[in-house]
Length: 442
Image 1 (cartoon, rainbow, N blue to C red):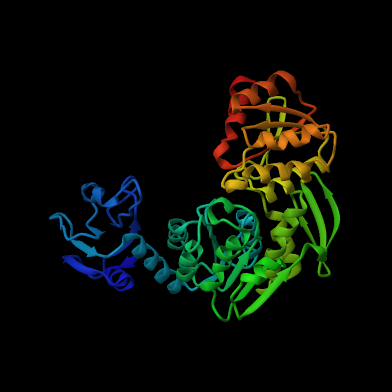
Image 2: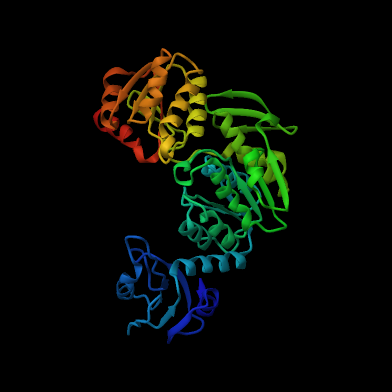
């Protein structure tokens, strides 16, 4: 809750109307559907909407205060604050509140593994601190504000995931967040269609260091392309999977040694072990002992559509279809076919790979052709078919489908409970439709 003076000072607002008591406190609301009379309405704007069109609706719901970029003042308002840009004001308020609470602050970005790493970091830090994290993958500027502004006053650690679709987006968030720790999970080819090259991707990811405190710590894999574009003079920690000794891996379990300590995950996959290294390094830096870190890692569970195990009727699925890029598709399929009997891999198109999208899909096919041969592959979409064509040429069992309904029908009519099926595709492929169709029709 904010006093009006705090809001005015945080955003350097011009006061258009002020008939409200100085001790009145407000929460920030950007949505008139859930707004309450104790909120101040902050109308955001986008390409297809203008929140200022709903100011009167907010007032009709009992709200007495609002922000605006215009000069119009409604009679039934008691406090009207003018700003140049409401999204900027939202971020300024978030920055003010974050500095007021003053938690240990962690920023996380990367081409893949951002959300997984964020959840692992949360699990580890929660062993010692009351911790707030980005919800799901709400990792843009608005998600940053929502994450910060829903912190309880006694929050001791804050974890903010940062996504991007172009240069400058992470720079914007990190300079408002001013993290104590900046983590890059990896630099791969996700969004290469927008950014044009892997170097540009690395430049965009390394923007996280722009807001990193000079007394802070940067943590990332030991990738040369990250080191090449990183501009940070403070402490740097580079970890590597080559320092890991895998002791045990099975379905739903990994055990490994890292720098003399034993850790466990209740999930499979070398890439998940690698994601956990950032959480381990951060935990040790914050004085969390290895046993506590291990307890945190063991409590980690994947969130929706990330290695989500589901049984639908007689069929067994692992749904990892929240998103996909060449690196995550290779890693996910390799883990799956190494650990599961009678594997069926269902692959869809990967998006935002630019003019070389066919090349990247065929490259995935070449990688998969060197794995377990006793795998059925089902591809959905024109680009995923390029993966399938490579595999078919190498002697694999491959079926091609144009849409989710057709592949669902094939599964119902031709497969049984002896198979486990793995789903991987970009979000735009809507692979959840496959599971829904089988639930309804299977």
